Length: 278
Image (tube, rainbow, N blue to C red; front, side, top):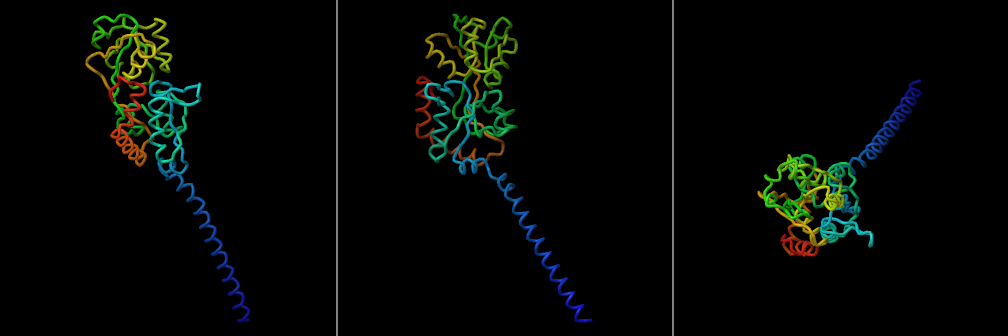
């Protein structure tokens, strides 16, 4: 009887041991399965870019910063050339995702793209997204097709309902200009080409934008008078990315400093805006 009991106890112990081993094995397998997506989620934006060898750039129809050249089927302008210079140096391909200034921040946060160039850093935006060091500074100006009176030389004298002005909705230059022209009659549009249409149709007296955009219009059309009213209002031009993209931001700051120092960025600016001093 004792031997039978001992045999049964041994069998039970062996079965319990086997079950314990199986449970441990399944638990380890489950942990490994769960750990994989967790580790993937912890990969930084820069690690993902280096791994995929692709960076997605939010692109806005706003020359000279960006322009979708339908003739060649690619994006051209200051920002595409800068992006392709910086990321091309580390073997990363640039892909473009169309957006607009008003939705650029949301596009970054929703992971539609990784960076947006030519995006002005503001304290409000910095709560939601990160920014690189400035790639330039953008003065805000006015361009009119009429003979501008002396009143155009100062923001204060333009700050009346009689002054009709067009600007791109959501652009930081627009927001800055609205602070000095709160009483003007504003027509806000989605893109630069629509702003130009408002001006050329005569529906507004002038358009407000950054200095490079206005200068390029003058160069391409051979018309218009540009004024930088006083006091001068300017804003930094940066590259934006998702919040907490520390390694991507640090790398971009090194690349920006490098290509500013060796003259490459200046050459890009001079290609599109020969008179612009950057």
